[in-house]
Every structure is written in structure tokens, then in C-alpha cells.
Amino acid sequence: MKSKLLLYIAIGFTFGIVLLQPLLISLHMYDMQGDQGNWWAWLLTSYQQVVGSWDVDQVVTKLLFGLLGVTLALLFMVRQKIFQLTGKRDRLEEIKELIAAGENQQVEFKSTLRWDLHQFKPNKALETVVAKTIAGFMNTSGGHLFIGIDDDGQLRGLQEDYATLKKPGRDGFEQYIMELISNKLGTNLCTLVAVCFYKIEAYDFCHLAIKRAGSPVYLHDNDRSHFFVRTGNGTRELDIPEALDYIEENLNVR
Image 1 (cartoon, one colour):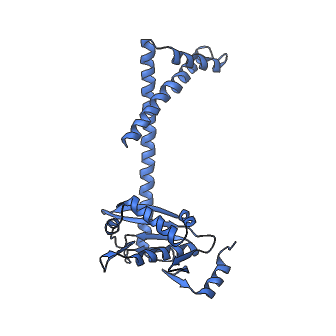
Image 2 (cartoon, helix red, strand yellow):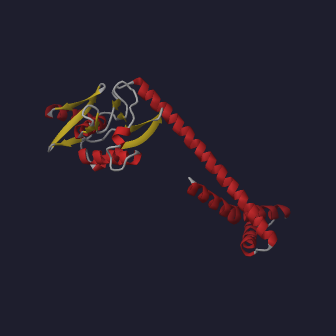
Image 3 (cartoon, helix red, strand yellow):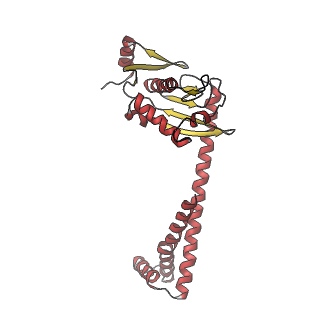
């Protein structure tokens, strides 16, 4: 945040001196001449004056225009921050509505990604279940997968999962999710999943917004390929005849 603030100040100060000052001076000169003549010539003259003159008056003028530029830059930064906060608040409200509606054709909850709540240790089988759900959404119409929320829509958080990662925290969790998708489904499918994190009542949870794939998505597990679809509020594996019929009717195979 500090480095970003300093960058805006530097850009604003430069903008004030290099652009604002010659622009405003040239417009003033042009206006004093009754809007006659070549304004571009006045602009060039003003720019040369700004760059070439460094007496006391000019230094003070440069400083004032630099401060004006800084003010405009900081106002722009604050405006952007307000838009970001407003957008994030609106997205959080949308997420709360999705959670409140419960599991359905396009919404699924998972308490954890890899932490087994019964065995109290990481469990690779749970990761496969998450990958299966993602594949099911991709093969159907897309959807929303929430991790850190139990089947009843109650927040559990991600602390137990975080503790199992080499890089604990949101960044490490997102990297692990993408590696899981890459290994189980295919690297090219990572682009169909947008990962976001939210916090409610001190609980972190992860939201995966999953897009529908245009071609069949298979889960690779134990040297076999499995085909899953979303049915109601669950994910179901189709056998070979069912999968072939479904693909022919619903997916564009190239």
C-alpha cells in the first residue's frame, strides 16, 4: 500500500509539471490573445519554458503544479479504492445470497479441501471429491463451489486446510487448488475456474466460480478416466454408454 501511494504521488507530481503546467499556461496565453493564432505554438513555447527555466519563480510554480498533480492523482486513487470496496461489498452480498439458498444444481458446499474431520489428518480422497465436483460442473452448466462451508451452509473456515499446506494462507490454497485441477482434470481447464476468498465473522472461505466446458472433462484417478455430471444438488458418475449419450447430446466434441 505504501509503495502504491508513493507511485501515485510520483506520477501525480510529474503529471502536474510536465502536462498540466504547460497546458494551462498555453491556454491562458491563447485566451489573452483573443483566441487568435496557433494554440499548438503557444503549447510548445509553454513546454519549453517549463523545461528550460529554473529561476525561483519557476521553481515555485513547478512546485504548485506538481502539488496540484499529486492532489488529482490521490483523488483518483481514492476514487478507485471506493469503487473496489463497493464492488467487493456487492459481490459479498451476492455470495451470501448464494450460500443462504443452499446446495442446488449450481451450488455445492465442501467443509474442507483436504483435511479429514474424522481422521484429523490430510486425506487425498477428499481432494479427489473436490476435483470430481469441479468436473461435474464443467460437464453440465457451470456453478459455484464453496470450500470452508459445511453441508448445512454453516461456516467452518479454512484454517485446518491452511495448516496442511507448504505455503499456509490464501495464496498457497489457491496454488494447491490449481495444481489439483491441473493434475486431475487438465492444465488447460484451470482457465475455467476463478478463485476468490471471502471472510465472514473471522472465517475465511473459498469460492470457485466454475465455467462450463465446451468439450468433455474427465477426472483422471488410479489410471482411469471418470466422467461426472451435476444432477440436482449432487454429482454423479456416468458409465460408458451413459457418458457417450450425454456427450453426444450436450457437449460439442471436436
